[in-house]
Amino acid sequence: MSELIPLGQWVDQSVHYLLDHDANTFDAIGRTIESFARLIEQGLQIVPMWAMMAFFIALGLWRVGWRFAIFVTASLLLIYATGFWDQMIVTLGLTLSSTLISLVLGIPLGIWTAKNKLVHTIVRPILDLMQTMPAFVYLIPAAMLFGLGRVPGILSTVIFAMPPAVRLTSLGIKHVNREIVEAGHAFGCTPWQLLYKVQFPNALPSIMQGVNQTIMMALSMVIIASMVGAGGLGNDVLASIQRLDIGLGFESGLSVVLLAIILDRITESFGRAPGAAKAPLFSGVKQLFRPRAVVAQA
Picture 1: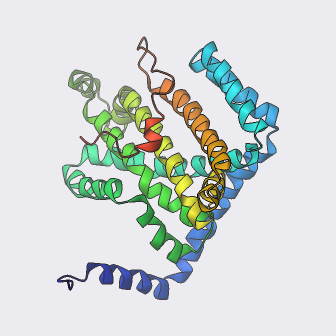
Picture 2: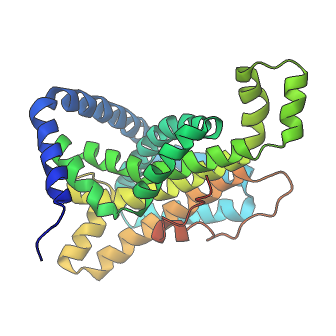
């Protein structure tokens, strides 16, 4: 059946037009992102293994509890013993790079959508498209515009992981108690003071939930991004699929799951309201396999 609307052809022509006319711009963007990602990765690689383990164990003990600290210890020792420590550090660096970019873009955009109905109306369908588009599709234009390597992987991950930060930030700002906002107005707060002294602190639990989901979605997409040379544990997962190596697939996949649990429980603890019940140990791992299950009310 012939196409009535050659939408795919139009998109393809648009990407080639950008390549022909804005190559220098994309090169500059690519170099900036590459430098940023390399800086984070090198910073993580400089830290000795024992110091990195001690940091996560102490953080887990402080934020979650001694049982989780034991789990973190066993998990990191297992990753090291199976020989995936270096790949785990690369994956962690890619996840942090993608998450930071997603949050720097997503949180201000979420605040803007909460404050401006027109912006909310425009942004909402775009976020829906970003969340429902198959993850592999993002890799094609990213690889065409930036080549192979970390940069297209990070940009694809940012597009995929940013919507929860936008939605949950907007949701948190909108759901701040109206009486608290009115009290801020009564005390003469300027709009900026009202935002960062009243609304943002009260919306922080919702915002941290957005951070948590962004990290989980970034980690899931970073694995897929190995198809364009992003590196890390995703390379081992991809190699195990290509070679039908069950052992390699199990070991690398287990390393991803353990890293996901550690990051999920720690970030979830920052978004939990005081006195709230703690989530089960494996509560956030489903985000790794069902990354689109996020709040969509915003």
